[in-house]
Length: 453
Ligand SMILES: *[C@@H]1O[C@H](CO)[C@@H](O)[C@H](O)[C@H]1NC(C)=O
Ligand SMILES: *[C@@H]1O[C@H](CO)[C@@H](O)[C@H](O)[C@H]1NC(C)=O
Image (tube, rainbow, N blue to C red; front, side, top):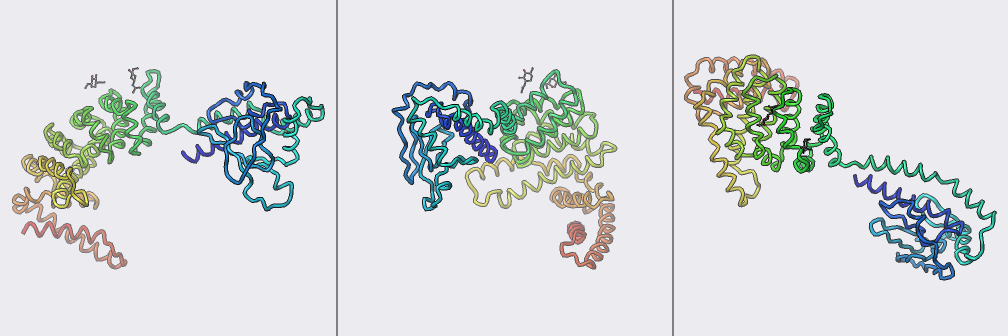
């Protein structure tokens, strides 16, 4: 972004110099138009600058080794550095940095960033300012024409500038454009989905996600959660989930915008699997580190909804996601209560503690029978799913311990896992693995077994 902007400034500077030089050299242009193009102005304006200045009054700028402001109408002698402040439009000039260089050709050049002109050429131009009464000779006109021909036509330069302008499109502009595309009644379903896909990429950035609220995108996306097109629902949930990730501003705005209810509705009703997966993702992002939303989630019957999801046939991947969501909430609260999120507890720490203490997840989990649901996940053939189940079981131990102690099936399943992971951990050690994955799983199994005794 800044690199692009700097590049554009440079182009403008060079452009302004190029536009001036042929005219300046031919002696027919008003010197005060020299280098006057500033950022954003049309190069054409140069032509409108009046030519009524009396060339006899022309002042010659006296450069020193310091930057000094150039006043309109001042001529710059050869051998000066000229720079243009694109913010203010002011020109400044000074002597070249290394006056020690003896050769005329080098010492007497003007640094225009991309082009240099010999002292001879500029002296000639300067002479014409002084002798304005003298009409340029044909020869001089020809020379000017030739010089002009070396530069690219103005139209071409303008086209390049337009391309540059397009390259400069900011994330904010892109999001506005995509949102318009998405919201257009003329857009096809594919176009709308593709707009959501591109938006999803952009809203990962915290600043972009907040701009997304400003331009009305968040509300539009929340509204799309109950679209009649599953593919739109799915991608709207994905955009929502991405913009919510680690972004408290979006979290608050989403709860206020009714996202919680809409996501719960998606999870509670019959929907294609991809829609449910993305809705669960958005829900997890909405609840993370946001005890207020967690409390609302519980009040609105979130646990019943997850339960139905867990028990629905064909949703193995949903099952583990639902349990992971609950596990994250349990652990998050525990960490806050034990250590606090902040290295140094501040005033908001107390408030947060109070909010978390109102999230009574564990008792409700036990009440709703989740103690009996989670062990089912141990039957999964996937290590990853088992790991999540083991961690969740350990987290749920306080309210579930009594039940688990009497659960012979659970004890049997854990013993089998213990045996399996002992073997796997051993072969892992054989390969010299220090951070043993199976060793870690074995550790989880064994602490579970320890709690059942
Ligand atoms: C989407 O379109 C509707 C109807 O054309 C309009 O009222 C609304 O402001 C638009 N929303 C956004 C965020 O552009
Ligand atoms: C989505 O829900 C809103 C209110 O919750 C309702 O006004 C709108 O008609 C619904 N849209 C669809 C497509 O069901």
